[in-house]
Image (tube, rainbow, N blue to C red; front, side, top):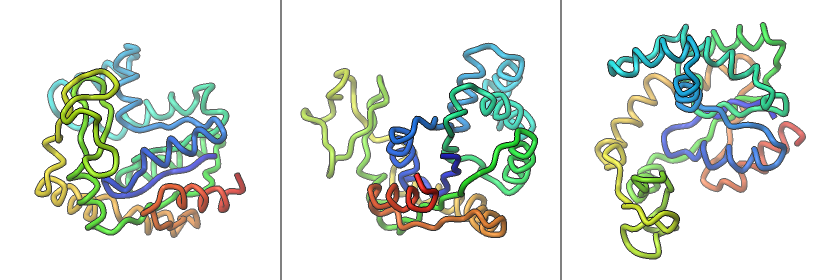
Length: 213
């Protein structure tokens, strides 16, 4: 599969991506992942990106696109890829379109995961994360066996600062202003697939039916 996953914070992009990659060996790619990998590998682009990241600045689009180009050329992407949370803006989408054309890659769909705002608020305000290994839990649907203690590594499990109701409301507002317009962009490209993402299983079934996987 060669897909872009769109959706607000808490829409389930990461969960859906993991379910899809398990089906056909596609790789899940996020901007954060490729930036961290480039920095870790010490590539020229990674070193440039690190300078911005260390200063707390946003990494310029041209650097992100350079790193994305190198990532998409990776052997593991031959089986397919899922872009998780990228692109985030219309300019990035336009540059990604040109990049994929240069690489001879055809997207199958840009999947827009549609989840009601109240469901997202409930998902994220009840989510807890291990500070050591990053494992994710939910106090309602998937609590830890011992309150506040990670089942996997015994680390401390906390609510992230950006997952309070106030912080999430702000993140959703920013998403609606800056990233939601991507749906119209990909609709114009004839690539948009809108799916109700309340259930991850139904999302995966819809996507597989659309792309014939």
